[in-house]
Amino acid sequence: MSASPGAPEFADSYLVEVLSEFGLALKYVRAEGNTLHYLADDGSEVGVFDAASGFGSLMFGHNNPELVEHAKWLLDQQTPVHAQFSGYSYALDLAAKLNEIIRRELKTDDKFYGLFGNSGAEAVEITIKHAELDRGMRIKELKEGIEANVEAARSAIAGGARVSEAAAGLAGGADFDRLVAEVRRRNAETEARPPLFLALEGGFHGKLVSSVQLTFNEEFRGPFKALAAQARFIPRDRPEMIEKVVEEERAALLDVVVQDGVVDLVERDFPVFAAFLVEPILGEAGIFPISRELARALREACDRIGVPLVSDEIQSGMGRSGTFLAGTQIDLKPDYIILAKALGGGLAKLGVVLVNEHRYRKDFELMHTSTFGRDGFSSRLALKFLEMLEADGGKAYQLAAERGAKAVAMMEAIKADYPDVVKEVRGKGLMLGFELHDQSKSADPEIREAVEYEALAFVIGGHLLRKHRIRIFSTASNLETMRFEPSIHLSDEELAQVDAGFRDVCRILRDQDASKFA
Ligand code: F0G
Image (cartoon, rainbow, N blue to C red; front, top):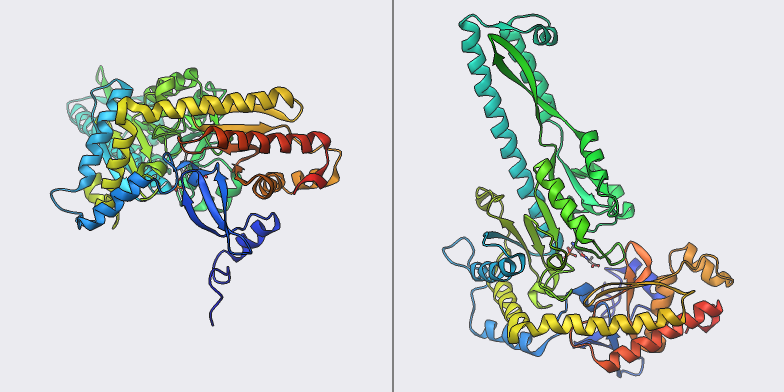
């Protein structure tokens, strides 16, 4: 049995059915710059302006000629794609280049060790594993200290010291061995607790088994809760909640001390949390840049709790915000940085975690491997991509900022004309969100129904595609926000096209007349 070519018979059947309802199931056959071409019924190609841009992974556009040329050259050169587990890999050069850029932006001489994977979510999973290894080692050091204190107390007892009344009460007697057994039993119980992570409400960190538990959206996370460690989520406008959550989850190990000939018990803070993950610009939440104040509060909180601060720059990084890291603009000082998406130039799949030397656990290098991780092809393509970003004194960053500012001005002008329809324009550089007001009270029952079924963004997307040849989606967890992440080669003509399309949508929503949707 075989299906006709391209028929969604053996994959994506439900997905294509849903997209078809909104006219979004086009067959794209060619892509260049900010344009995707689909095949019309008569066999001709129709170009569509792509504001989705590979979910933000195309800084230089689809099939950028310089990157494509380089990819071909790499293959012609017989670049070893697979030479892992050897003395040299191109991933080392990539890590060095990333260090150069990141140290410049973070204004530090600290070294960042690279760990490589194949996607954003995989890089988050690597982060989770590394942070848990680190936590385990911190627990081990704590326990070794406690065991050393137990031995010191044992010597003191032999020399005539006695067990305090409080300690004897806990152990059910003044016998030192019983006390030690009770301390170990209780400590083992605490140690058996699974780790917790901290993340922001609305945050998105991927959809693999562990990373999805750090992704706030209940729809993605809920069904898989039993599979992995959990996160406590902090509202981004209420950093004071961190203290409250930390207090709620607080746990301690028992330690023994000898003071004035008396053996007593004290509590040592147990490392409950493994890491705090944040996006400097929350993407899927609806493009919300976090504030400089929050960045500082996060750093202080992480130092207080003793956990690494992880900046997920998978979507916001690689220059999209106008700097290599979006966190640079708010002085975010992370211990780990996660990169993926655009890093492979939109052609290669890779994810990288960069871990500050003060937090790095080198044992991880022998524990974690992946067949394609740090492969030669994606590493060298990423190097080329970085070279292009940094060329001409960082012209690409400047373009992201300039083209982004122009797009913001265009969207703000629409907001000024349609204040009842457009709620807010947000973002930095070319990571922008265009938020519409809630339409659930629209006079048009069709619009109300679309809101009720969480389908209005699809309806709008379908209209923009058919009538204006614009491909755009809402953010995954904020359906009122259209996300605008084209490449830095965004032209004035393309901006004018988006201006016309957005204005048309605003008009229809203001008129409360869904019959005008194409
Ligand atoms: N972290 C962030 C901030 C992301 O935006 C994404 C993906 C991931 C992690 C996971 O990366 O898809 O390569 O495994 N965001 C996609 C999006 C889904 O729609 O922007 P991945």
